[in-house]
Image (tube, rainbow, N blue to C red; front, side, top):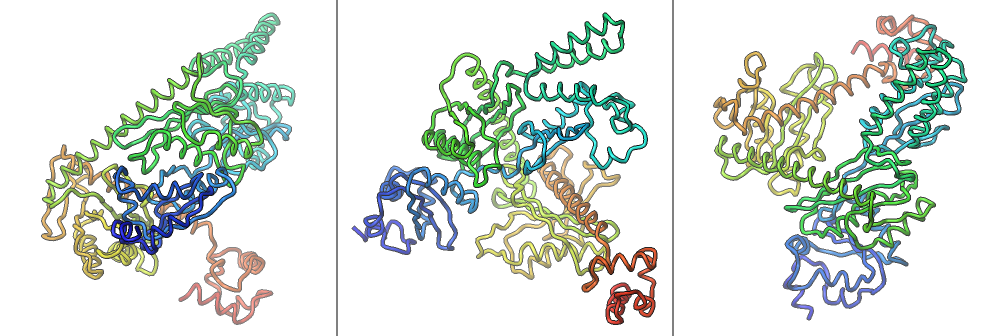
Length: 619
């Protein structure tokens, strides 16, 4: 019995039959490990013996499982008390290790909220992301920053509550532009009473709580009262607010729901899954977000939903994710009862996951399902378009096989300052942003693009070759001409990498895209593809993405550098001594011109430290 499994799975570092025979039937988590000691899969089980044994059947496995099992060299087991503990541990390990064959949810951003500083005399409305530890009220979460900004923009028009920073608000001597365009009542310069301002704040809170009808009723009464008192301008303001709220209500599909709920629908085709998530808070539809889990091939909808809900909601810290009272799902899935129990324990309130609903909630699920279908069709269409571009690229460059991976490099700096190199990656699905990299370039002559390109390429590929497990591109695109392409060729020769094809792309005359030129590294031949060439569009796309990524990195690095004083780079010169120097000399420029003796005259600056300061500016 032992020989048969060993022949089927030769990479295993242990006797499979003995391992399975001794395996416990208790719940727990198992980790599949390859020969490079990398965890490639993490799973949980109610019965470890039955679950792990199922991977080693001689027939009936999915292609994905067959490939994965062929790479297993070792299996590690963690026994837990309950299946719930196993689910929690599995979820944490997946988020930490990101195994190659697990369904992965790429959603590491915290969700934004609207924050109201209701402890202040004149509260402020603001965009907030991160830990909710300030004193005040939080409304949300919203699916993305755009939703929050749209809501804040609308609220400014309806109820002009201030949104400026406290530092700006406390130092005003006259009203700002927001007052002039009637989006703030200028509490900073006492142009509104605290009572009137509080009324706007109250209406804002009611709106954010989903009580728009109550606000409208109050505004109608206020409009009628103002009209009776012949205060027609005030009545017109209420009229406009009512109209704005009515138009907003027309856009909100969910209107009668009183509590908090999330709506989740899934669509699966051609090995790609789309999960659509709608957020409803206090009866207000805050918007939706699309997710495309990684490694969805050959997975059932039940497995996909279970993995998504566990990874999205379950966290190690309770403040990471808001958990609503109800979660509506388009399909039934396994582990629902276990997940409900964990979410109940984590949130402190009962959480219900329902897939069988009627009436209006059924319409919401249908709405989410339609959105999931539409997003998936768009994704598949985009993938088909990208694949066609790859095929045209193969023909245009006469490549032996269809390229699977493209990498493009660009350099960005301002007259040699804060040089940054970018590397962006495309595969046959489009941009692969998880593999993007930036390199801060140092120790070169400022403005030397060739040296910067040489350094970036060397750092990117020095640990990659045909023998390593790290992926090499099939095509390396360099944003530049002969000089930059020559640097790429020299680096590849130095690192003995011969399988990568190199091309350069240069801007056409007048920076017109249709005149862009390709340079083939092997022959130094220039190629101009037709303006409607899909291959050229692909190369221009990755070039423009590398350019954008490099400029963003350069601006961030430059801003950081400019916020840092050169004095901070001198060891032994603390904050007090830096302050003393700047005060005594009247600024940094005078410090840079000062001699050693002048520096040493300053209290707290020794002769040795003065020498060090002088050397820093005069080396």
